[in-house]
Length: 607
Image (cartoon, rainbow, N blue to C red; front, side, top):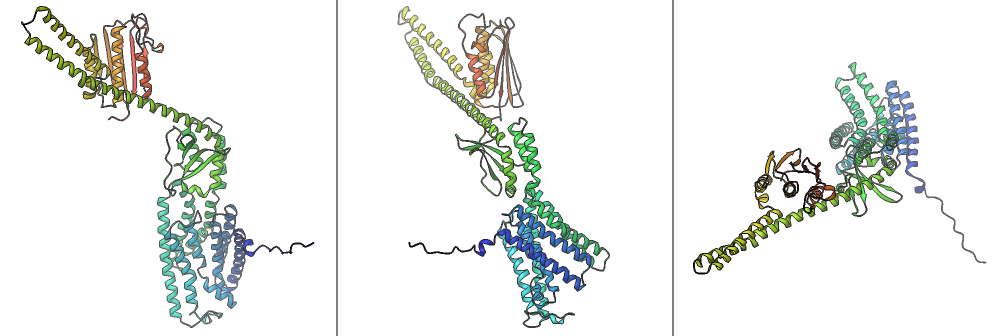
């Protein structure tokens, strides 16, 4: 039986085996080898103080160890790898102390190897990425300087002139002045790169948010102390007794620097306590504002905002049910979604710096998921109530606009025609005066009186629909005109009232008009007091009469118990109108003790 030809399965390729983690661990191992070799070279050379040797090696090994831990904790972040490379580069600089020509020559090319990696590390921290073109240019210049210029200098440096002559395998021609010039150029460019890095770091600190500053502060402070000690030590000179003190400060800062970098990378571990505190607080009933403050404090981001997902509108709303605008610039705000059982529940709008700590964000979102889901339901109810309230306000506004239109139509249309008809009838009376019999004269007079009565009723109807004086003169003049037209002893007391929205002014006017009508028609009152007060963004209206009382607004009665006639539903309708405007109407009317009608209206901003 013919079978398939045997094809051996290829072994895993070297590239597949060379994972980032393996690269880091190989680099750590190589760095340890270089560090031990450097210690041997320095001890044999005898030109380095033992304290400097020990502290330098300690700092280098700390970079290797901290970088390995940082990579293990955050493998997708390049900060750990860069820290390891700084340690490797630091120890590689000691290769020039070797007496083996090949190793010595390699050391000449790596005299400042750690500076290039350190530049990349400082600029990329804490995300591990270079965020701008300027930063990429600085890093490229640093690499070109620390790895390119030493090669040029090595081509013209004859190391056989040293006390211990070791051949430079790259020597082309002995030219000591050129070598010194190249070294000077390297130092000058390095200084310029240092200034550029300092500018970038200062700008980053100034524009950083509070969460990002908490990460940057230990690194910046340690580096600043080390840099200041270096500058101060160079300024006083090696002969000054203070030079050793500044040197100690520098080495201590150098040893603490990798720990500062590691602390920034390991913030997620430090955040576990905050997650535990959050779980403890979530057992208590929290309002949307309290929950948002708790999450902001737990994440260390005061600018954090919680958005609740509303499926009907496919948009986020805040805790009060108001629409929440999505951030337009990812560099200013970031969004972390919160889901439960595959459903979108909410989102955390947070500082972009927290994106470097996704585990902590995920833990916080998972811990608060149930509370956020409950608050989402409450926020959705508030949004629905807000929509209902807005709809009612639109209905009130539309009704007031229609009232004004009817009032204008009656005033400019029917009333004007009645006025013209009345004038024509008067002219007819004057022309026919004495030429017609008494019955015709009486008939004309009755017609004229009927037109006058119709015009009076039409004016009263127009005022009842919407008084023109309210639109033309404002609330207080309209109320004064209303009291003058009421056949009762009415006393009006009012504080200064600004120009308010038409809906608020009309509502206040109709409350007073309805209360006066009830006092006149049902309560048998003869005295009425009206108090109008505007304070703290609210308009308070109180109408008090000395009638028989007994009014019951909950039953829909606009009149009073015991009053004759059919009670209307005026005050009940006004209560609904005030509710649409977030106001409140109350009626206190004990039998036999008069009636007090109170209205409280939020006025908002004056118009």
